[in-house]
Length: 177
Image 1 (cartoon, rainbow, N blue to C red):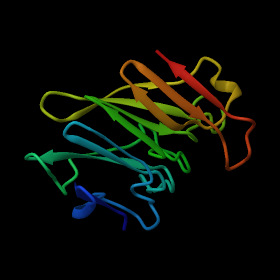
Image 2: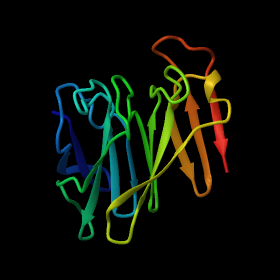
Image 3: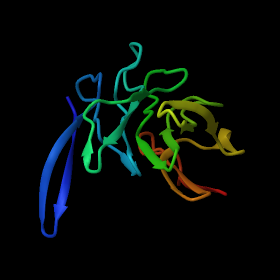
């Protein structure tokens, strides 16, 4: 079972203050393969998690901070692909910025084999998460591995597209504003 450890930094001493667990996990889910934090929320991916009997479909767990420093060890929501399939790798990349969560799924068959997509979610005022949309480039049929890595800064998003498993070409980085 995977676990994330939360720590508090006191100048040069790093003290572990707790561990975060994925609510439901399978062996080798690689929980914590990617993490993101913004304000009082933390997201952690488990891209090899089994979902509805689909191996390596992937999930991501959303957690909240309680008080001023402690992270609630209880996951507040588990995010999953809308139509999971074997080897989607949902959660191989995650990022959170304010109330928006982005989760990469580079091997989802969107418009062909292993094209990939990025899922966008929004945290509403009550703290629950709603699916908003998927992000794919206009040339999605000519690439593989879209969503293998993601980063956001304000209104700018960059998404990596690479397929290290099958060596699917030189890769690309897509910028969205």
